[in-house]
Length: 203
Image: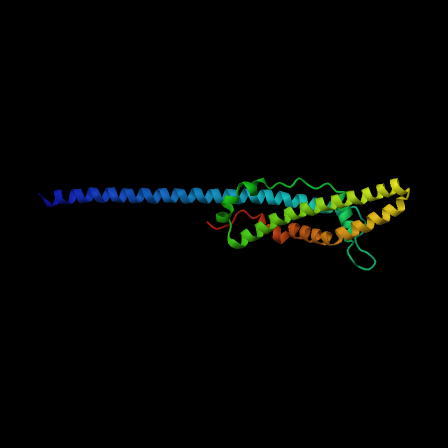
């Protein structure tokens, strides 16, 4: 057997091995690219949703503030009870968290640790804000019920007004402080820019 005949099987085997390695490398690259596109898609969806929710919350906040010519009291304190009252009388926006909920399994691989903490906190803030608005609405309903009960039972709407207002103030004062804090956090430009940025990430 000549040297050429001895080398030919080795060359063929080498070509097969090389082809297999190149094929595996190509498949790996394709998988990586697909995973990258999927993660980027998740980021884009959540960024669009978050950006839209921020606009809704900002408009909601402006609607509340427009109910008063000034929010400065004589003693310089913010009128948190009035804030809760106006919030209860302002329609809450249709916040959508569908993209976030549908992609919870992908967010860990789509965001870095710091980004994930911020986007998670943002979603929690949205839930808390909605819960506080519901609380204000219930408290305001109770205030009106107290007024109506007093008028029906005693023919004295003034006493009902006073009692209802005292109960309402005591119930909403501290929650209204948290409500204002949450809105400020949600619409903060620097905070929002990080959450709605879909062009970076851990790839």
